[in-house]
Image (cartoon, rainbow over all chains, first blue to last red; front, side, top):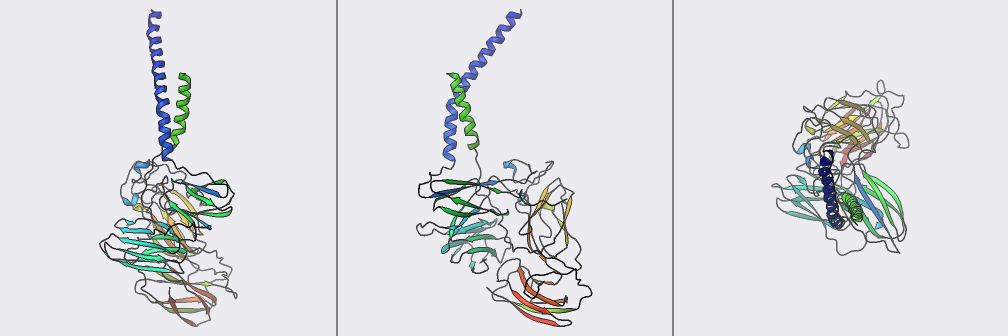
Length: 264
Length: 237
């Protein structure tokens, strides 16, 4: 009886192995395809050329230590350590550290490479606020501000040394050419919540979302300062020496974790 | 043969997993804070109480439309070379309590006096946690506040302080910490100010604007016993 009982189990085990082998074969075919797809979506950078160097700044957004909270899809809910309640609403919208928008990276010592005419930078004001919280551009670039609200907006940018002021009717846009380098605080007469920061720099810059890396190519050899500005987070600065034919990779932490901690 | 398939499958799956991250873009963030650098100041061993004092008064004018936001004119005590010196021992206002209910700092703006305590209270009605941190030269993380907890901080330096919660993206506040009690808040239609009881000595009269629209002023002021200094503070671009 025992022998009879073992036979089906052995057969089942052999079948499982066969299924597993078939599964592995399938995975062996599917996985490279998945890898190729993933690689196609991942950023790829050109190899450094012999006469110049590169800088790649990985932008690592990290929530404060101790904050776990809901997953990405729940970020519009509030955060509670115990998660016994979930409040909804705009005020409870959480910071998404996986993709922090409008990060600005500047290399002040590196002159912006000559390109065609500057295409300009646009900022849109609608009922939810400004479309961007941080902008960056070279001196002499046109800044267009579009008013999608139902009332006229008076927008002012002030750097401490220079300013611009635009009165923009509903549904219209206004353009200004910002010529002086500096950091401009953009504000609105009619709505104090409409604010943004405009960096106007003679250096080389990058702006985007933190899940991309800030990549700088064809940099002449030498020492550079790398400045990283993320909304509502401490700025990050490093010096790096660029050598010919090499890519320097930096990891910038976009986080409050490095701030001094208060004694409680 | 199947063993090689297995190895190949495992290697490629492991390599692919970290790259299969899809992120959502285009979300909106509140802007980066723009702050003036806070400055260190010492009290020294002299006291405001009992000191011979004078008065500073003046009128603030604007070269263009003034913002709806408040500004502060304040005095910083300096030495003969114009360098910030001891600010003296003075009384400080009562502790400021800041609510965090509804994921909002309330008040969201305050002018404080150096040495003043601020208590942040998580007074949410439900179990909602908050974090409080400061940016600027006063960079500090006060920690995570669970419902029903609170923490205090004494502001020993002066200047602008941006207050944020690292969890909730719209939870921001702004404080200005004056170096001593000699300041005046200019808001609404106010155009004049008067600061009484300023100890005799050399000062700089400076301005701070919640919404930066004009060049800040920096005026030398000397306070003499019983005298009044009359100033015209011109805010220009």
